[in-house]
Image 1 (cartoon, rainbow, N blue to C red):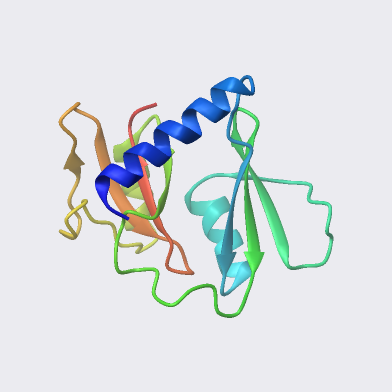
Image 2: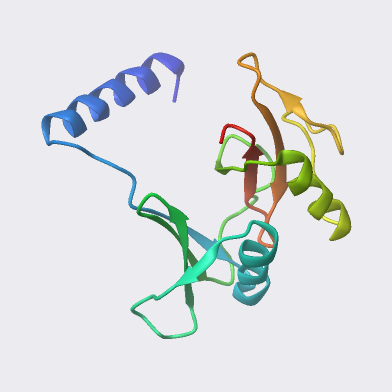
Length: 148
């Protein structure tokens, strides 16, 4: 999709959402190759708290992301073709202490990189926000920034 079509689509979606009242994000759903490994990652590394999920089938884990939003991790053997090609498709979490978060990554031997793929490097956006990228056990990219 080219830039013009993307902008038009976004503006149309924004006007539809505004016309129908306050719209907010409810949840993000992702697939996981290994739901247990992904669950441990999102709890122990990212720091999310597990919440009740209605399926009770061992194929879903839900996490509270704050402000009424949740992350739904769903077990699936083959989630996608190749998730690690680009960072454009990512989930972003903001943390109060990025340096402390990075220390935790290092202690757990989890690699991180900047937006361009430079290992163990922090990216600084033009607005001064510091960010890094990591991958969860299924290969999803996560941006972690200090825009807390």
